[in-house]
Image: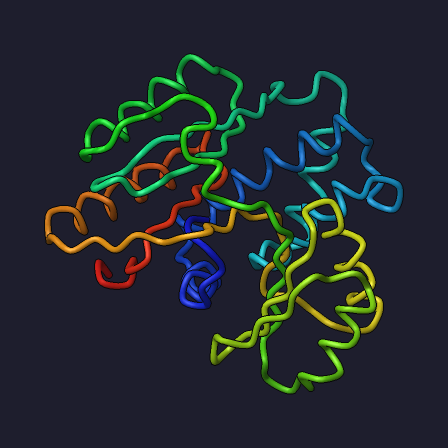
Length: 246
């Protein structure tokens, strides 16, 4: 769940192997647990849970798995208490990185995150050291196939979207204020649209290119380490030429 809403990233998730899908569900399962604890198990009255369910479905997680996670989170002696923490730092050559975590052991997670930064030529900084380079937006991605651009754009803007992007050859990207994501998503869903992605993201205001092979390799490995950690929910960065390392 790193970077910004490039279609290649979305497709990679959709085509993930069983092991990768299990890891994705572990992460989303934690989000379900937090949402249920905060607002109860009924998505009709818990907009946060409704959003997480939509995210799970966009990642091809079966309904049975989602329902079991909700029941587990709402049962007596429910799962561990997860705490949300955000870490900021720099990758190779000053790439700005924001790491969102959900953990039941803050010391373990903080130590791991610092290790991943250090191991690949970066460093973890203080809160606020890079977040000023990003804006938080709701991002909704709709596949272009069989979707009329003008009709979707009109519906999105009428629902409260603030931007509509068509640069990617495969998706329409709709942006909202972070707090308006669920309102816009629900309005579009009611109009019959389905989504490849719908989540709040940190969008960089500027991007940085990596030129050396070592930096490209190290940044790619750093992101892999973050995403392999069950405590890490999302990683956002301003690395412009990520595809050069694939």
